[in-house]
Image (cartoon, rainbow, N blue to C red; front, side, top):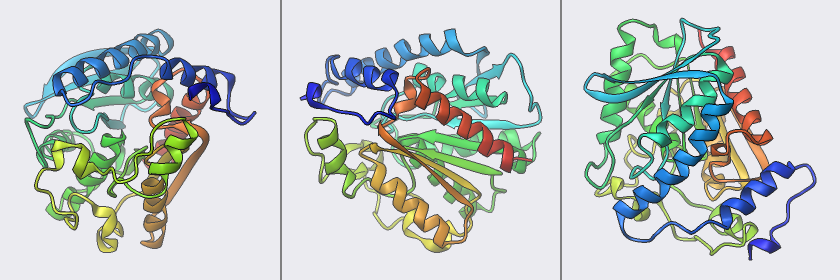
Length: 310
């Protein structure tokens, strides 16, 4: 089925080759969380090796407010008074370590800004709002030395959802909001919509209709679909308080429906919101950090944060 996948001529040859190479690798094992973590760690480490060779950064592991983090410093910094917090993806159940770094390294180098990647607690051992608690602990700690307006928060997939949840929690707790946020391939809405059928069809994969965060991730055990701290995109009054937001998805991303609807709802709530919608790109396409569409994503993040952060 993968051989039948076709891309438009404006999709780079590198992207088409990357998709076919990834599709040819063994699929993720089903049902065993330990095996899933091993599988995705191998994927992330392979791409992290490429990123570390291509992007000039220094990495240090440390702890902030009792939470394990990675400090990623660009070797040619331009914005030493700014800070980005990176929230990794992985369905809230995997993506620690190499996954957290993979999403931080190219952004730090491209934006020439220090990034702290937060290795938040994972499900099923820790359920909602454990990851939000970790993010807020780190965020409150960095607020002691930097103004909120100079801090940006971003994340991909589960990290995009966690970004939205963290902002909702800041609003609820009366904490000063970051200057800007970015949600890539995931956001503050439940997973759903037409893209659960169309994206797999375009990629020659099984239909995912009926899939949701609450059915696929143990992190949402016991969470109510109407909880504004879990799914803030369902609450216009909450969205109206969000900072400037960048959303990223692609035509072959199963999360595309949720991301594009979130963008519309942010605009309707009066929020400065931008949408970067890639033709032909799949979920978390920028994990292949050196292909042109990935570099375009990192450049867009850099421009966005440069515009909105103090």
